Image (cartoon, rainbow, N blue to C red; front, side):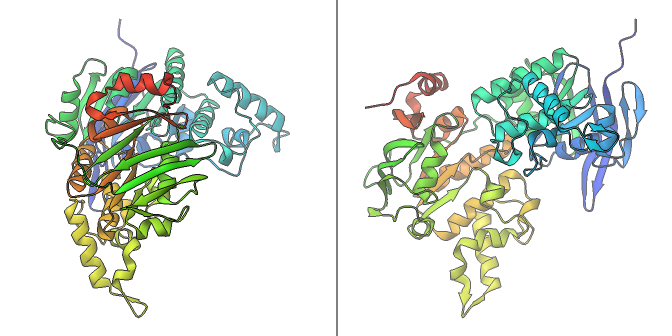
Length: 505
């Protein structure tokens, strides 16, 4: 008996943009009820491929078969009508509309052909949210008032409001804590048990092994491997396929001896009511200190308070022995404190501006004469800073939005390098960054520390904190529950502490 046709078969897909061949004969085969993982570095062609599948891009050549029949996906609506839904990393929800309005946007239940049946929409939305394990989300609440994790659930509910048979999930766990990731995986398991296929994109290889059935790897617009078993293919093989090289060591070597002397950064009794308890920490020149904890443990709030973006209710921050004015970003920056925030696109980068302007924006007074900016000096300084970090492409005049995630992060770091900062605060420094670029960023951060910077690091990925930091403070519910050299901890110990630890006295 012949096996049933694949749910989706994409063959020989090519797509070019001016000066760029984004896809070069890509094949992708997806079976009903499977989780098919799509891997590749930034720029490998993943986004272009899923936009072709979503009907947002038309391929130059190649064929797409859906349930054995050749189809042409001329628009996202055409893809959705076939049963193909895409949940992008940058969620496309309308913040000023309610949950129910977003879920049914474009296919609202109506009476007499034009009157929207709001009660019906709310009831069906509530049923979908219950199916997804989130009955607490109010269908009448504005989407803009929801957390990132809740907004993602709303996007899934919108997909399921159609007769969806394949869902593409682009970096769905990027903004989730471990409990929320567990719920996401439960939802995916329920969907595949009902025969729904999932194309899952993630940079986190441990997730791929946990949830995936098969893997397709893209590199430079080509599928270099298709249908690999997700759970048994060695990680080193996957990384080698993605990067074109083997990767023996991801994290750079730590200094043999811990730094000594007067700390560059001192935090004394710093606290914010309802966010984190009084905290003491020190970071020396040449040292990387990591904060480990779940989302909601106060990690990011601590960094933002040190930076002056939040005003503490108690305590003080000192840089090189001098106290900073509480709640003043300007005072922190003048004292030599720089922040690479979690949401770099929204909070750090001027996406429509050039790399040069993004790098120089915190140092413009250096290039200003009588109210005029010396553009040549600005460009030269930005180029020197970006070259020191090996930012690619080596052309600071290009818009920063055209860079990969790893190079966008390098642009943020170059800004503080140009500013001459003494304290570097890193909040989720490798979020949305591929495996190969992560290793480069780790090396950059280690080198900056070795050159004398004091680095305070926050990451949701415990292995990242343990691999990059010299010392680690473990947080639980806003309190430090343990402090130790990174080499004395392992992932299981840290997770035990953040889940069950009691605040240190």
